[in-house]
Image (tube, rainbow, N blue to C red):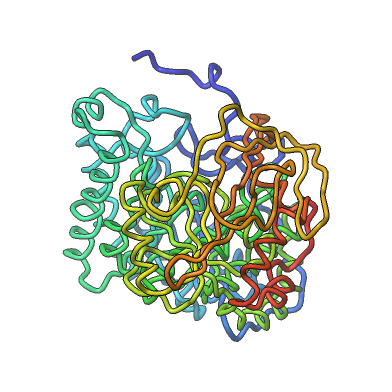
Length: 550
């Protein structure tokens, strides 16, 4: 395979986030896992009244390059963050082919502990060998078939565990490698299956076991990315990984909703979902400052707390003191008291949306329910559910498992709101058929009123059963209701949008279900179903800290 040069590749995501400056400090191997920034020379504290949150604490990451550049004068440097009232620093030992000198790591830890801070380690598992050229897209992610990479992984964690009693792993512990060795080892299996197996094996044999052997007290924390819908495609199998690690941290970045597919509520939605998997292990949220303004950066903190986090980890020490970033941190400082006060509403989420591990379909739909004011939360498949109303989408079960899940909910006498994507697999009870030719949706009618639409929306599935509560084009049911045994069942036919947004590097991506936020008649029928089961009015006032024009 011919090695791809940097000039032949389009501008990639991490590169696009680099701080605008004439001179950047040297970092690690390309592709980078962290954006470029200049050396900080202004050590004055970030302005604001010192925070004193009662329900959570702030922590801060020092990347390996931050430790290298600011570690020798760490006591002076951390004065920058005085008004954030940092309680814990995470000191990174390795990233992008660069290992921090062990003596410096020990000295930084000692200096910070003398100042009264809690100190933990951090590792970013990028460029463990020189195989990044085989990644299916420009990425710093490593190969875990490669023996050199595994040897280096083991050594890095042995060294880090000898210094720290707690280590967090940044969210680059995945693989997109398609080197000859990976292709051969994968064999006839699909890539998600192979990647999930090798990541779980690497976690156990080359991270956890060696670390615990060196330091029996060490706690290992896996930080998960924010892109949950693709976890299994790149090796994050939560059913395998969550039981292995002592704790799980959640990436609650949403960034700018105009250039990403994540809505402002994404952080609370993802945190509540991961917390459902292992409540005792999930306490920490982690987000960065990239693609943010004052509102978005502060919103990420609010959503983390609303989701149930009690520690907010900010990335990172080398970027938030930069000149154009300081106002964002000041805005967070000024909002901390309000965020702290509102964190008590984390139990507001009252409508479970079942999501089975490693499933696909109707991606990003869940967050639009929250953005529309429905206090929904993602939860794994269980045997019992305390709530009366359950929401089902294509991700609630694999197609072959959907009838069993539906029948179990009927047996539990639950009321159910489902998408046609789920209902089409329950042929015993529902008539769902594909529309012969995709129907462009030009209007929606509900409660005797019609809204006309100018978006490119298309209906692909039609429900033939039940009472019609809302109609598309005066002909096709949008929401239907029926009684099955002792359960009220509702089926919603959500159109697909052909619209696009442009991301930060100028590429087009689907605009998903943004139309639901522009046209109330898509969401009002669903709210009518949900209102008897949850406090929709209260959540609608709490869902975001700020107002957004999506």
